[in-house]
Length: 332
Image (cartoon, rainbow, N blue to C red; front, top):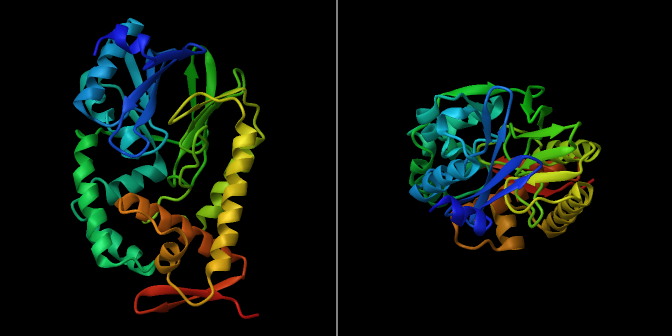
């Protein structure tokens, strides 16, 4: 793939001196965004795409189109650890020797569930608590093993902390924590340019999952995530550069839609809890997820998050039976 093809077919675009590069991924969303921009120390990459030959060719062609070399890349910043955002980081680091920054909570998750040969053993107890059968946990383990080559070689990570600042084109961007999609998910916001790199928290064409179960350590991801989104809504923002899809300009409307969507889903979860059930039993009854293992995982993840929020509100109770939590309405 050459640089002319990228420019002529919209794979490489430019917004406010920030280059947006579409990368391919073999997952339901099909594409994700990689960003390149100049900083005081050199060029910066924000999120990378998965490590496939096609994406290595796309990235190489993009550098040629921009007119820079690999060795001008001074830093690689990852909004979160997921494969479609971190996969090329190790490959890039090997070429340009740039540091790779990952949010601290996501580094813990990465070490626990990605950089390990013991995924099944580490995830099984959490999956059992939600009522997920061993067969599906094994399917998830197999899928993680299948997609993990798309993020190798693994980079050496440096910590990205909330409050860190990134200078792009002479303007400072603050790293802001928006936990949920992953425990440590970071967005970058500039109060000078009113631009926001939103990662996977807010996109224009979909509502992405707000919990990273079974990898999360958040006890109430529903409340934590929606609280962070409400705070994000209060920031001045003229344009949003999302992790997937097109740039958009109505951040407040999108956040309102997300909050309304999840409030309705939580009401639906409560109404469907007519008899004692595990989170997985309830998820199947409400949503009947299709066969793809990660769709099943995410449907269960959000159902579980709604249930835990209802427990915290005192509307639902849970008890541990045979290793799984069984939820029922509070009789009071």
